[in-house]
Image 1 (cartoon, rainbow, N blue to C red):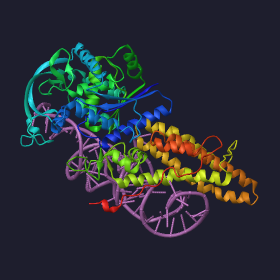
Image 2 (image 1 turned 90 degrees about the vertical axis):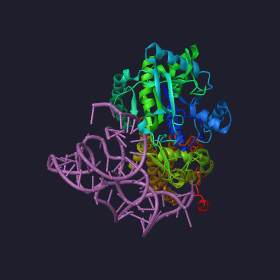
Image 3 (image 1 turned 30 degrees about the vertical axis):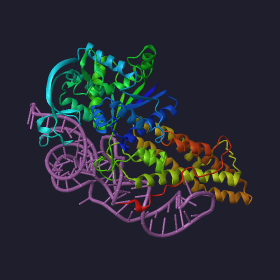
Image 4 (image 1 turned 90 degrees about the horizontal axis):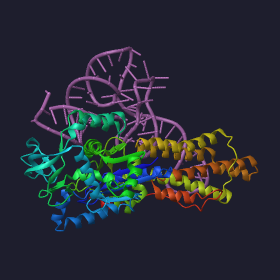
Length: 511
RNA sequence: GGGGUGGUAGCUCAGCCGGUUAGAGCAGCGGACUCAUAAUCCGUGGGUCGCGGGUUCGAGCCCCGCCCACCCUACCA
């Protein structure tokens, strides 16, 4: 019955950008949707604190790693208001008391299965990437990503016996026990598994980690590879490895949960769809049921990068254009497969088109007419006899199901698209039935027109109420305004625009 | 080097298992209406479906090669 959804936990060496906003808004839309449909929902997000990159970033600023992590984690947690997020839990892997015991338990469970072993390892390691590079990958002896010479590292590390799990992984992914969406990503993972899985290092020396990270149980000279501990957050947060109450909580959301979904970006599939399930199988813990992989957001046609100077601060965008506009763009325009290009212009166009002109105007004209022609009172007919009325009523009735279907497939664009289509149908319905003409007819003595006017207005109010309701997962603030505006039972509130058109920024800001 | 994804109207994208004249929205053009946030509604122009072959009665969809963009991953077959 339950729905548990997570985002990846970003490492916090800088402020959140719009790419993470996409991920967390998608997860939020899912959480709100299922909550709205009456399911028990738990939505987790948090920060990956134990990355060596955080140590480096802190050094560069001359502050302690703890300070840096705390400060930047606050920026991520602070997205809650600006993005209207409804997460139930926020875990910080370096300071949350639940995390350490849970990850230790996970480690020991893998160890007990005989899947952790020590091996001598030597290689060229880039601190920026936190990974080893083969000689051939280096460009002029330097890391292709960061342009610096990697360190030569030689040490004994713990390894995880990933090679052992190829068949298990293939089985769970092929059978759908672990669903990977979109399908193309699933195929990608399967071919990745087929290409051969090698054991991977799950620890590093304390020295290389600058003393930062989760100590390996029983081996104080080593700390866990950051991915090992970071992935663990998905189960340590709901209570794995905690006390009795925690374990009960863990059973509710994970072990016995109906849906356990991870929303992640395409760059970290291997960790989530290969390493993580293997670790869980090894530890005897249930697997996630769904992994949804989103692509990236580009800005003005270019990849997001600090060096390019095109980092978009989602908080600044919402301050300028509003939370609903940004959420709406993320959920309405980003395709399920393929990168999406963000521009302020598109954000504005989308919001004005759908939310102001389409939905907002519909609500406004509907409520206004109820006031103008009926003094704010809705007279609902007992039955619908008109063919057009029935068709329209059917459209409204179908909408929730269409949204369900789309969101079950993680297709946000299809879900919001179905919504917009229904709003369009409502605006057409207004014009087709021309309530103003019916009002005229009634004034001229036509009782038939009067009855007809009641019916049309009642259906429109119903439509607006349905829209207010169904909009909740996507644009919660606007949804609430619409619900309030449409009133209850036979009364509607005083008309006032629920979503004023957005103005484009003045051209003087260019260049 | 290997694997993958995308390349469909000016723009953003749909096109399920191959099946009539390839769709939507926006932008453009023309018209209607007045309840409404200069909103809404109707009509309309616009496409060699990246390129070249092939399979088929029939291909945007399948196969082969190539080009472009992006992602993952490696010197292992």
